[in-house]
Length: 446
Image (cartoon, rainbow, N blue to C red; front, side):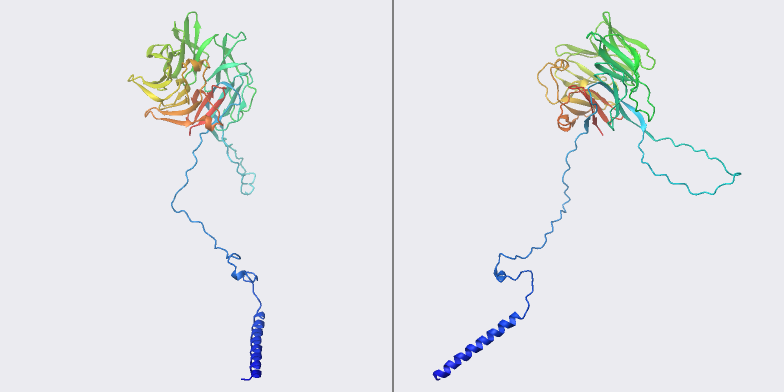
């Protein structure tokens, strides 16, 4: 091939190649680009770190095991009732109007007007309001002797009386909360005066009066000890006459007094656990043997029950068959009057920091968390020691003990030294006074 022809062939091939490339280029530009979510970045199809595909939604796995996380432990319903130090209290049953939701009245159907000859008047009989009996509380303010009251389920403290008796040291209620005994020192600082008053009755639905006046009379000076009968209708008090200790029963309803005891021994503490029996224990001391006796409610048949126990303190059961007692070690025992055997319990406290259930099947106690090496009960009586208590329940039949409340953790961290423990009639509440400051507390048991 000649040189000239070879050059022409090369030129033709170059022209053909450019023609093909031009055709392909313009053919691609004629198609409009579409946005498929990857944008129009030229480098995006080749860059593995950009424009990652959106991962599919992840559905959390379903727990089919049936496992239910455990609930937080329930806190005991413990709360302070009084807003002031008190000298004594009573729990009693009180009638109140029942809260009933108001239902809009439905208008009666239209009736034809009767003729005068047939028209008869209808007597409208009012529907009596619904009422309920609930637990109520009354207590005496230490500072001025005013009486306050509230319901146990709805704490709404209100003043009941305005009769002023300054610096009441101790008080007791009888006659189902309608009578009160107050003890206080006369201005000479030595003579103990004891006032017995009758509270005015309240009308149903009208118990909002605060200006009630307490009227009554005085018992002999320097009464040493007072206890209330189980039915609350009587009080028993001990007073010294010459070289003797006289025990007298007072009837709240008619103010009659009957002497039941005349003893040359003067250091007695009395209790009235049931209607048939009164108990007498010697005042306790760690270094002195203590003794306990009983008499019937007529003042006869004096019997020795326990004796020769240092630091002896006692609390007889309502049925009279058992005696809760403690010693100078603060160990608790139950003495059975029929078998004359004693069972040691698993807690340490004083019987007077306990209360029996109504059918003598259970005991509730304020039990010290820590007991040091002092002489008991002397150190506690003299105020040298103050306890921090837990509330324990003791099953009398089985002997099992259960801690049901720790005030230091459920009452805002407040330490309580429990005294004057009492149950309401239905045993739905446990009431007690904190010896540290004399405030009234309640613990829901149901």
